[in-house]
Length: 281
Image (cartoon, rainbow, N blue to C red):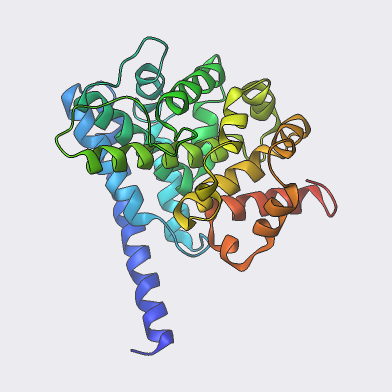
């Protein structure tokens, strides 16, 4: 298969997935899922898988993607199919993720929100941008990272989930942390109001800057962490906090690197900087 044929095949596959996502949204099952009890979890799982399948590896383009995202925003609403409240409830003060079932729900919810954000970050910004939700989001993220982000000894976390497979336990934990870090970037990117509300005095910024050193060299980890730090640094006070722990030159070099141009959050940051004009961040 030639390069051109392979490219056309990939584009056709991505467009087909976008169309299927569009019809999933139009079917009405998403809008009814928020009040559907146990069925909601199945719908959210289906939604997560569909969003993952639709995840674009090239810049979003074409009417199919436009229709899919419009349908998604209409169907989900600001509650994001109940995931907004579930996310904050799971990570609220006093909530326990010590049981396997609760942890899997938390991991699924975090991944769903990340997948949706990568399709259309304005959905999560609108969801967590109204009323008291920015503060709920801020508290939920801080709690999660304090319990599950790697410590100075590079252990995944200090709490046990009573899973039979310790490696699976660690993998789920790190995956959820990665999803949450990416979600943070999409929630604040190019949004001064949310940056001010969420980031003022936020302990999470320092926590992200003081993750183990291997997070800066591992591709999977750095591609989640560095774009989010760049998004956070759009706010001057946050940039100062980051600069006290990490090299801002390193972040800018990553931002300009060829590998970073394929990352959706970097693309969104670039769009924001372009709108602001040259020389402004």
